[in-house]
Image (cartoon, rainbow, N blue to C red; front, side):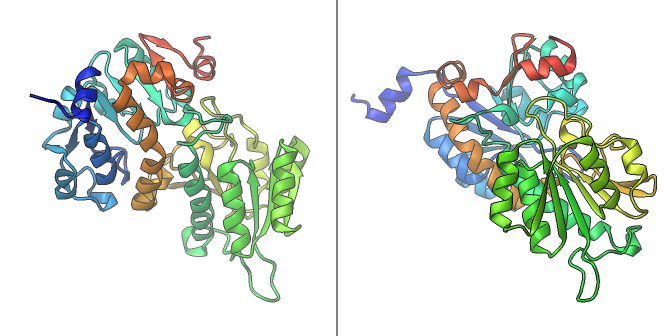
Length: 378
């Protein structure tokens, strides 16, 4: 009996991997870590896929579509976690999932361990191979799995901020674009990276007055060229931040250091000087937030009032647009998931430096320097 070329390839490599896709349980989470399209790709490469029942419903993907793509459907999260070699998720495991993890299992997801000390302890105790989306690197040092969600969060921050400025919601009643004869609202964006640049784009498109601050002059120069002077660019220093924050109708915190805890760049004293009903949206909340008065909120209770200022800090903000976010995320993760399936987990990590950079925990140790420093392990 003769084997086909594909059968020879599969028989000569690692055993078939079983990828588990549990339903996300974070409040208001609508994303799923695998689309039927990605499922079909994994199955074609020789993997088995086990998807929890209804896991894709909120993103618009049915169990029937996953079955047609070659997946098995599990009635419980427990079965998915018990049987999977690699768990593919969107958000970090929550306490309700800690007991479901198997020792030495692989988890590929957003981990954000710099702001998750308790999760880190669990991953170390169970010797989990934790691969974090947010630290996987592409050629040139960019972060391809962070990029699509940063773009969505940046755009949403203006949409959300404009809504929260409405008088009936406790906002100052400012229309960001204004009308003829009135001043448009002032949007201040701290951080000109991926999320900050997309926040600037949305705010400028709505007709707001926009000021963006950053430490990197190259990013400021690029924005100045793009907007031909319609956006004010300033160096990020305490004096400039204090002046601009005091005048902001909508303040966007978009300071991110991949894997590390976000630095506090806006103090409580600065927040106190903001006008009543002004709004803060802190995109950096996944990494602890960059504004002193910020604390995580949820989709069920997204805001709170402090010093007369509306604070919004939902860590899984992109879940507001679950279908767009799911498609954007899985398009970015697909090459790395395919690599893990084709080569096997250990070989893929050994041969791909960018994927290896995503490894945050392994064999009971924190392997990412920035995370280790943030949690006091270095």
